[in-house]
Length: 480
Ligand SMILES: [Zn+2]
Image (cartoon, rainbow, N blue to C red; front, side):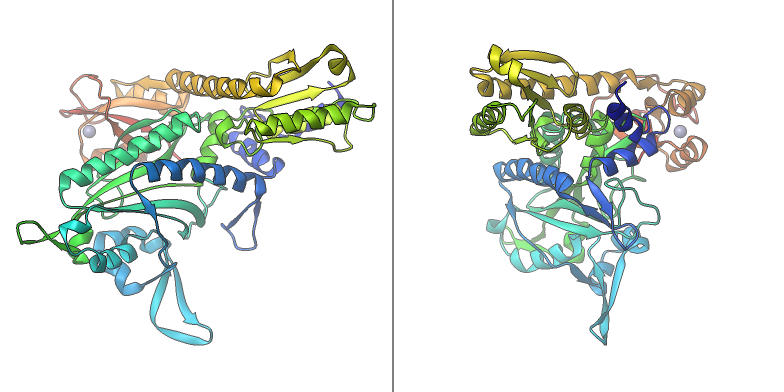
């Protein structure tokens, strides 16, 4: 092994050796984040913020296409507003950050930095919604929220994170339910067709649902270490908040009625999902649609006459195709550059040297398969989008195969424990529906119910843990 390659490979702990260390090595070595002076607060460097911008762009167009508009609500929420809905405040109280002073003066009422915006948005909706003609009201907000976490990990759990939160109001329960599922479907489509991450969708148990929601739906993905990651949630809030905040409208029949609401959110956590689903021992593997750099152009022996010109020409042609490309003209060896771009997870690498130019070809390397091949230089730029699409398909198929391989079925509690603790992955099993049973399962195995999937299977009629009658199958896993 060449010296430089060795250095690179050694810089990243292997996944098998220590997955948590691998994760930290990858995010630090690829320049995604840095730690700030306040514990738990993270700096998103340009490479990860670039991924987030692409996520935003892709999601936002899907939100707009389903009739939503963006708005922005204040960062600070008066304590009295947060306290209005009891279940909601209890859910968030342990992790809110308080603002007690404005300058040198103590505030008459404490303010919280939003942990989520239901309460402040509801207080506005009460003013804005008067008639059935005002419904549905379909808004989304891009912002950051603060939840004071005791132990944090970049992207997965940080005290401040970036997200979007959709908040809608409807005339009927059915309309709200339809919206809740519609947005979950938007999320699933996004996860699979943009991030190349296959997800399981379904309903959360009462224990795991959002504080104040009637029903919470989720999409769950399986990471390389066998743990689940909740990638996004969609809540049917029913009329809980509408009643507390007096969001009423005058219906066609002349009667005053409370609206039905939904909220739905996804966050920078998804970047953690991208890293842990697609990454390997060489570093990141980015799905092409959210890769800030989709193609890296590497001039080989660039001091030789005409090489740099030909490479720059190729770069221009690639960019004209609407592909995000960069040329690496740094004074480093070719080997160093190969490793660097591989580590950064750039989907395609194009190498162009004097020999290639002479033969009228370029050498390409796919990051997902590490497959190396040549293509004619003529018309090359036009071929790349198709190759990027192939990389996306390849990543999705690989991730789906990994997940399916590590999804186990348990009928007995021994099988259940084996699936969670030894084989490590999703375990499908029947569950009685009781909270105490769910608590005991978590205590014994560390696993939680990730969801009661829409795609139910008949795995017998008895709860895998307590043996009582069970009507529903659940996905269990340890989770981030
Ligand atoms: Zn049970």
